[in-house]
Image (cartoon, rainbow, N blue to C red; front, side, top):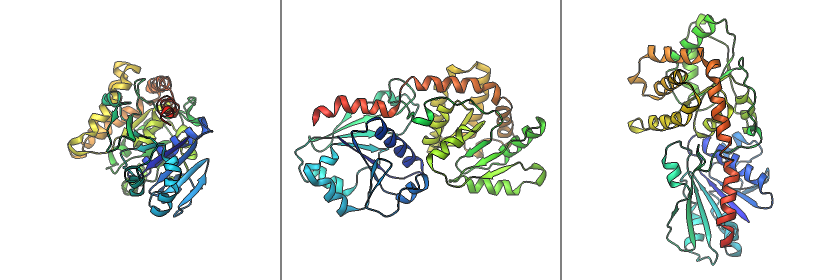
Length: 373
């Protein structure tokens, strides 16, 4: 069987990060199946997988058959052959749509075979993930069938990707670095909190800042600090996905953004803060609160208040929150990070009981797609 993933790189590297991780995992657990990966931005893909070459129609990397979304003639001719055999199962990731050449094959060439499109949605802790998981929807052809598949945090969803480096929970390093991988912010209150915590507790801990949208504002703020307020800082280069995973697991605290790194943080058992993507009318707070509710049962009431307070402030529009509030709330989170780490670990243990997203997806395909072929 052939499984073809579709991915548009929309938000920095998060989309391709998830799809690359998932397709690799499926290639490993189902070696008899062929895995195609159709990507619209090979430059970004190259940043997290250096073996991927830019501007090629086709390449074979790490058991994945990688195609350039924009190579119309090459892909049209390749995927049309044998009655669209290469398109028997399509994983359309994150509402990315389909390339024009694929639309022509599916809806204009009148294939004899039935095609199953699985709509892999964004990760969310909101309740609708359970409602829409495995829900079917219509297309303009009876031969093209479509179903939703929802990653998530409960056993009524597809779960999270649990690949090799994340099968077990690594012991937390309480003296490890603190990672910042965020969107643009005024980082001054967080720097003040860090500096206060380091001085009051005689802590000598390195701070890491990752490449991405938030780095420039992070560095601008850091450079504006007085020498006495500064702390050890390392600017990370772009690193491949495996190196990123190992780096995350070495940290004592994670301040992270996006779906890909947030999912890894949830599995890490390390105290973390999630910077959700800012949305209109502050809808990101709905998403943040939904994830907090999934985490709440694993903490005492007082410990969870520390986490919830800072997460909400951190994700609220900055004009609506005072600098003093942010500094105090982050300082309290830092000060209690060792104490509250038990809840993050227990949460990560519970998530593993939901199973691996790749395995759950393949189980669905084997039960519901193969019988169509």
